[in-house]
Length: 343
Image (cartoon, rainbow, N blue to C red; front, top):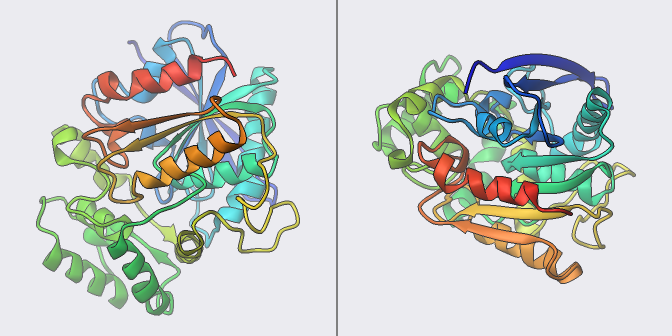
């Protein structure tokens, strides 16, 4: 397709932090409603526009959707903060949704949510904070995070001493490690990860999962995307890692800040949303195991039978459902099919 135009629309989160949504327009007018894309931790909205022949954004536009991408407080395009999922769920996503509703004049929107954008947005939905969202396509993890054993070990053993020296972990340490703890972690990764020559790719695998690599299969990425990844990962909050450890130990998402608007346990009562969820998981995911989405689908299906859906994608992992060179054939059509379904 032709050149895509981008327009940045700032919005103020509920606690005053400045975030934004990016409106991406093609050459033809959209024939369907707005869809909000929500990235994961320590990346940015640009995640959905890798250097592949057809990006997910372009595919959505080609299929008639009005595309909006959210930069929430975990975005590396914003100043780094020591954020939690609670803050994103309560302050960021509801305001992003309101901004898209205001900008488009559409009373209802849809969302495609990934990783910690998915967990925090699911928290918003379950708490009844985004009633305008009627269809949610969730990738990798949502209400029930299930981690590989090695990942849980790393989180429980390494995070507590690490946070004494730094408030963030940063895959950019593979390129430039300036403080002692960063140099130590970079050295450990170089000693243990030999799967490729990209230091950020290896740092990402060590930081976020259990595998060589952990978030994608190299076979699924073209060379340009593998190189592009060097600039797409940066600071991620240690308080988030503490929270996700507690959530994984509990078996489902829990709040950690005691905000009255959020339930302490997000699986303790029926969700306050009528949105239809489509749960996606790559069968090779070594960041969050596919069981994460299976459990969430079973939970939602138990509340409203034959309403939600589940897709387990063979030969895909955590991020390659969006970044993969063949995702335009393997995963994008399934996601659009779910967006097209009436709620």
